[in-house]
Length: 354
Ligand SMILES: Nc1ncnc2c1ncn2[C@@H]1O[C@H](COP(=O)(O)OP(=O)(O)OP(=O)(O)O)[C@@H](O)[C@H]1O
Ligand SMILES: [Mg+2]
Image 1 (spheres, protein in one colour):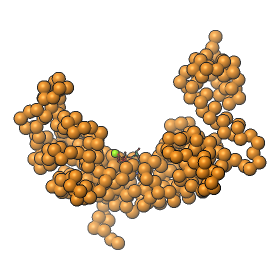
Image 2: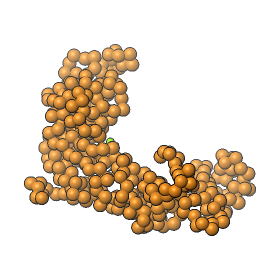
Image 3: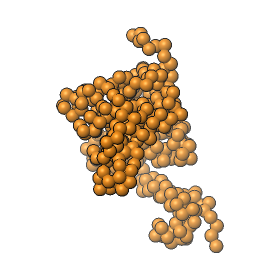
């Protein structure tokens, strides 16, 4: 279907990867929004790139040389958030030992990004409404009004219309914010971007970790395309980083991905090994290795422990600036033993110690 915005540049914005139709639409909306001073509401699940879009929008706008100030409204209590946003005067509450300017003032001439706006209390919502309408507010404990020239970008990872219906978000504030809504699609709805993103992050983490994972096994790619990505791009990014760190060869193989993605080992015995949460990295790694081992394997211990041992030695040696004495002490093993192990792992290039 033809859209009236087809003529707007739909190429990816800075730092953003993805060419699916919903992303192209979001790039176009962002470019259009950047030309105006209207408030923008970024809507998308966690990890869909709201912060990246907010920053790209600011940098495309005529306020680019002004400040870009981000406030996570979900991270602070009501009173701290009020003081963070609007500032306070000395003595306005117990810890207010001196005057403090808030983030709205800090954003003067630029953009303020109100992340997780859905978490704000009703009192704060009233104050925000006033800033949006009049670009004016008072510092906490003050009666004098402060005027600011600030562009507001807000983000929510939940459906604000529902929150309004539940009586938890002011409808008038939603309308004020919702002048230009930009919807960021969840990753499961743009499987076509998964490969592009995976290759992008492979490149990023190869560089960061001196890795050399240059290809993705077809099975692994297929599994990633079929996964539902509740944590969206952030989740993909984490798994690729982890795969680069754990990889032994140059290919990203299925065993390097969590079973939640590859999900193909349903037999009851294997289920015993199945990790119950994201943090059981070691358990999952071992499980994946066992699953991958050939049936007649006779060196399972070495296959599984060797890469872990190598990683441990490498990290501790790095921490100890390649000094074996220090590393041996930290590891609680004899220096000769460490020396031997380093040689075995091909990590024998440590500092000469006298
Ligand atoms: N399209 C994309 N291209 C490249 N990286 C992306 C993309 N989308 C998200 N990311 C990366 O994913 C991570 C999460 O992105 P971001 O913080 O912008 O998401 P968010 O929507 O603000 O999430 P949350 O609601 O949890 O705050 C970041 O590391 C970001 O760099
Ligand atoms: Mg965010």
